[in-house]
Length: 106
Picture 1: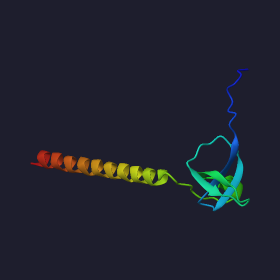
Picture 2: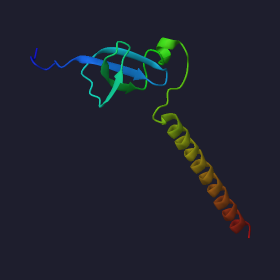
Picture 3: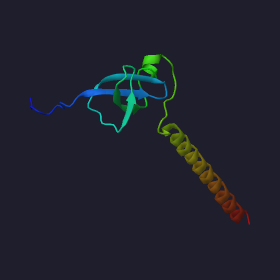
Picture 4: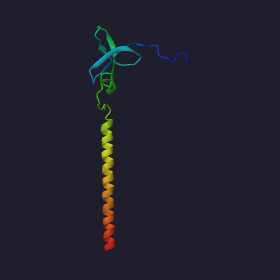
């Protein structure tokens, strides 16, 4: 086992899940330039997080989409664009076939 690979600069840090309005104080090495005054009157570094036990569906039992990065919207847009391209290709193929049929009928 390698020695001296684990961090040793643990300190109290407040993690804040802003979507759920949930905060907790724990020991961490996470760096932050923001601080917050905690319930005990001391000021601690603040790390903002997107998901915690208060908002994650596995812990809350709720089924919801957590989309902080717009991934679902990007997927829907990509899917809609693909459908539009497919419809355009089908339309183009129908027009080409109709023109080909006109030429053979004449």
